[in-house]
Image (tube, rainbow, N blue to C red; front, side, top):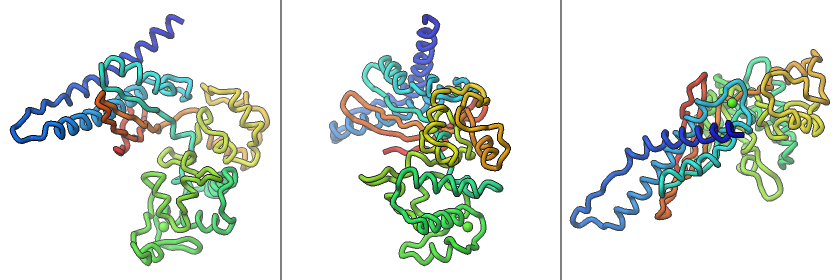
Length: 321
Ligand SMILES: [Ca+2]
Ligand SMILES: [Ca+2]
């Protein structure tokens, strides 16, 4: 127990050090120049400071991931309790606060995987099952058309049989080019022919795919963090009983799955080989959603996607909102 407490203190200290170094850079002194509206200056200063403190929170997440045990990734690790550590670390800042969450992206379906060689058949079925599990209101024909258009959006060529390529996108009222490459963010799917915002964001009747899809993970699914519907989307053979068994076995600290009941992973069928190939216990991409707040009430949010390769974590992109 003492060991645990000391370890936790270590994490908090690590976060504090990483943010203080950034935070000190931002204590800009605005001199009260004649004719300057002081209130406006203070507002500007506060929102700038809030932005820096949010950015410092992102840096703290980067440091946390770099120091994490990379043999496996599970929400029972320190990064899964990022929000608690963020609050503890903020206590050292005497005024400014950063708060937010650090979440795994590798428990989601990588949309770019749809054109993975040799796996397309399984990945198309996986996406179809996701729509069905979420009970999204779309006909089989509409879903086929959407997936064909998505494949064309991703594949490098400009030829199509059932989907949509440049000819279609250039004919739109506001024309744009077909991507013909991997998507940079999952929201990009909104540009694809046949996609509707309710499929992504959901409605009052059903949940959209937003929380279950991602890009850039390489297509593996971390079964330590994957939500129920993502686990079930992998195969018809994975029902609620298998999902419950997987959750009972968590955390998987090694890539051995004997603990899972309800499916026979020693089976050599194509379906089971696909499942064995897609499941993983590690993550390489995470998303941090951090808010920086100043005592004056000024607040800035930053959402960042972080990538970790070997012992290095870095920001892939971030947006301020
Ligand atoms: Ca880990
Ligand atoms: Ca194409």
